[in-house]
Length: 308
Image (tube, rainbow, N blue to C red; front, side, top):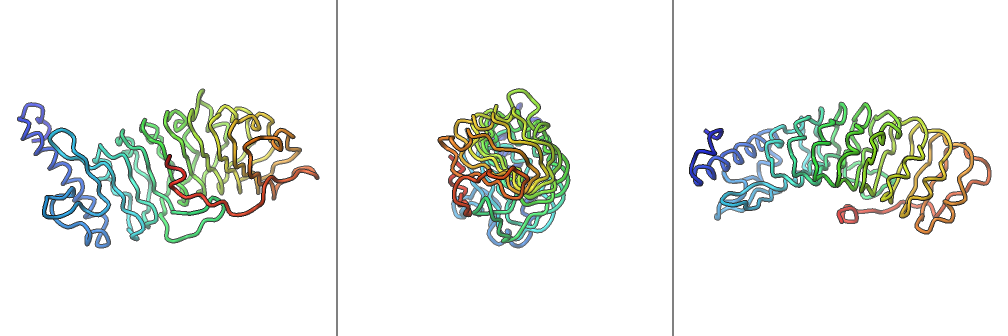
């Protein structure tokens, strides 16, 4: 049995781990259905010499055994709940299930994947201003706070689902998180709640909170996220004035404030910011004379531009 693996020989240890790997992948295979099965041939997900690895499965060698480090099963119209067996692949660094028709909650067991760097379970979009539905996942429920247990996580894509509740402030303790996209959901709460822990989001570059039901203002403390380059707040129910402190974020490049309930003036420092290329302001109650920055056009940002 695998729970006695420490007392077995090196060969027995390898065999046990291999069996666990195959069992987990075959459970996933069974849950995903025929659209994936046709490309998953053979008994060994990593390939056995005669057959290649299963499509979308990347393995690596650790000592005397192989482990699955990447699982990319996207845009194949998978229907059903999140495949829980995925969380048994403890060496995963990338999990990509986007552009399918998965439903239900994201399970708290996701917090087991301690080596995960990229989690992508949303709709693929080539634009930050215009979402084009190719197909969709339909995850519901709250964002599990257990995601905060993934210390290696760098990119978190949860946009274009039906997630509800508040964004867990625990995500702010992730030491390596660079990209957080929870846009186009049914989320509530305030930014102040999101960044309530001291030192929140120490390396975050891109923050997408657009198209939700967020309320409250933009707190001056948001300027403590000194690595921010993209701040996307469009289409919420936020209000109040825009704090001067935000203009002191050194590399802030894209700022989307449109279609909220903001008011007052925008400090002159924003118009003198050396990096700020785009600032959208329409659909608010700003005073006359407040102007946008840049030419309003769809901003094309591909995934490869984020993964640096």
